[in-house]
Image (tube, rainbow, N blue to C red; front, side, top):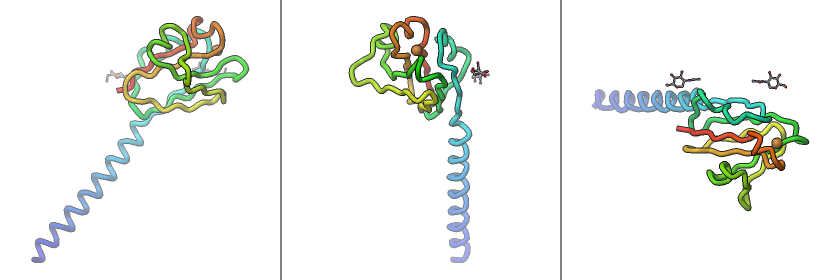
Length: 122
Ligand SMILES: *[C@@H]1O[C@H](CO)[C@@H](O)[C@H](O)[C@H]1NC(C)=O
Ligand SMILES: *[C@@H]1O[C@H](CO)[C@@H](O)[C@H](O)[C@H]1NC(C)=O
Ligand SMILES: [Cu+2]
């Protein structure tokens, strides 16, 4: 009986420890990377690793750029889909979803001038 209770208490402690470890790992893995959102940033993601839940901070002057969340077609063609989410603060913190994440500038001609990134979050 006493041993059984001891095992239960031991299991509870192990479970709590594991939960703590998992939460800790998630915090450690959720990285934040800052991008100077300007012309010719298209290659910025190269050589970087991204995980779903990571945050990208887009820094720019709101008078010169914005950030539009688009799909693959919008990224390739530089066309903004209707209902696309637009960020305009100049210090936009956007959390990555798993898979490909596409961002372009909605100012005329800017996406075509390389103010666009495709980020693959694993
Ligand atoms: C981003 O821009 C700021 C201000 O223009 C500059 O101080 C900083 O070094 C730039 N960071 C990178 C990574 O280019
Ligand atoms: C990205 O991940 C690869 C493979 O794990 C690693 O070799 C590389 O150093 C990482 N790059 C950065 C910038 O963390
Ligand atoms: Cu722009």
